[in-house]
Amino acid sequence: MTDATAGPDGAEREPLLQPWQFFLLGGMLAATATVIVATGQSPANIIILSLTVVSVSFVGLGAYRMLAPLVGARVEPPMTYGGRTRTALEREKNLVLRSIKELEFDFAMGKIAKADFDEMSARLRARAVGLMRQLDAGGYKEQIAREIAARLATEPAANVPADAAAASENCPACGTANDDDARFCKNCGTRLRPSGTSARQVDLLVWLLAAGLWLLPGASMARAQVNMPDPSAIAGTPLPAPELADGTVTVRVVRERMGNNVAGQEVVLIVGGARRTAITDEQGRAEFTKLPPGALVQASTTVDGEALVSQEFQAPGLGGIRVALIAGIAKAKAAEAAAAAEGARQPARPGVVEIGPESRIILEYQDDNLTVFYLFEIVNNARTPIDIGGPLLLRLPRGASGASMMQGSSPNAGVKGDLLTVTGPFPPGKTIAHVGFSLPQAGASLRLEQTFPIAVAQLFVGVEKIGNMQMTSPQLPETREMNSGESPFIMGQGGRLNAGDTLVLNLTGLPAQSHTSRNVVLALTVIMFLAAAWFAFAPSQANAVQDAKLIARREKLLNDIVAIERKRRQRPLSEAEDAKARRLTTELERVIAELDRGTAA
Image (cartoon, rainbow, N blue to C red; front, top):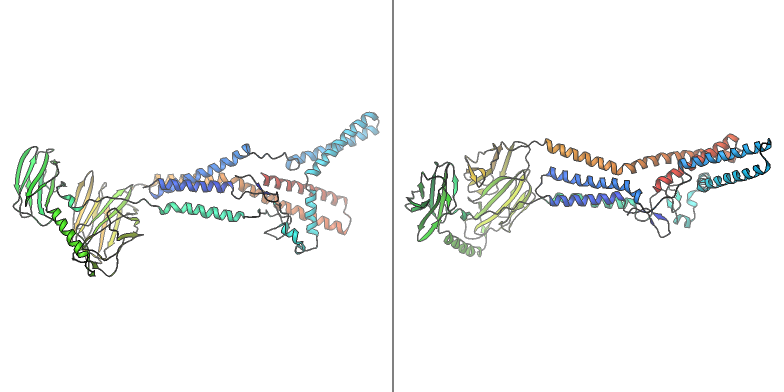
């Protein structure tokens, strides 16, 4: 994946996909998958998960940089011309030359026999020649000579032959033509990039894809799905009534809909196998008191030959129970359906619609987020379709996020962003628009404001009560607490709202949890992310800094040698100047060797 590849001309090319790019893309893909799988999590948790996954990819990159040299297939040959190794060769060469001089001196003084001198001298001279050849072979004298000649040349770069220019690469910093396999500019020392698809293009593609992957999970929010029962399902269903006396059950008998009360109707209540009867009053209610707590209870009556039976339930120990027995539901529904079908075939006419009295606004907590459900029934009381002059547009409260239509909604209803749209014309009867969304919570209190573009027949708001939560609203003069299953709710009921009126809900005592622990975890995750990134990229940054220093040193040495060579063209050099030129050349060879060794690594 990271080994250099050979180009068409056999020259070694750098790979297009670098290890950091591979690990970055892998981390982004893993973070995307983690966010998609972790549905229902808060934004802070999603951020922590994403940073943790990307940090793991950086840790993997650091481990790769550490282990790759140990298991890599390519083994670099030992370098005999760079750094401390070249210094050792120079030292050994000087010692051998000094030994030759001392041997000649001893022979001249008669301390060594001729045969011994010839043997030792030949061996030392051979060693010296070998060291010199080794140093010359590993040096950069030819490269240095070419660079010095290029700087001293008076011919402009524009006169380079066309074929040479085609086979070379121009330096992006100074424009000097370089050899095709050159890694650094021979004029200014700037690092050259490989030809073909540029590394900058690859980097840009990687970052765009990573950003796209990094951005993609933020658009896929979890959508709440709530199955709301048909309003007729309240028939025969026991509902808690804490305002009633302990052990009390009231049974209300109506025809077709609430409010069409049946007075003077006998109601039978079976209590633990015993039979009790009562007669409904003008409100259609029959009341039974002092029931034994826990006893099984079931209410029944017969209206116009239709037998109505409630669900079986236990008599309450605290508070009471209300039950509604509704006659003629099936007949009324059939009649409504027939009338609606007949009216729907009529042409639409201008008119108005309203949000019906069976509509509800429910607030509850899901995954520690305050979720709001608008369960609206848009009612057309006419017998023909109604055209209100365009679609019904309802702007959700400020801060609403993750809005989505819920099961059971009309196909004409849709939501985009914070705008609920219901297109007309509206058929006779009800058009269902159920939408759910989340509201941000910044503290222990919350103010919700909702403006209605059409009239609301009757307000009904239910809020899941957690802790000491309280709800107040100028549009809800009546509020009470009830139990719905295992969760207590605060129920508020109000009158009619006209088109353009605003509902204001004030919630206090919200469970404002301390975010200290979450912030600490987030801070630790960010620190881990930065540390992983530093450990992953620190080696390359250190190499870049070291290369910059070596390039600056290389440039200075070249300039010094060029200055001496200019003097050589004007006059013979002194012994000191000539020695200085040799010393600078040796130093320059060492610097170029260090640069090549860093590039190969």
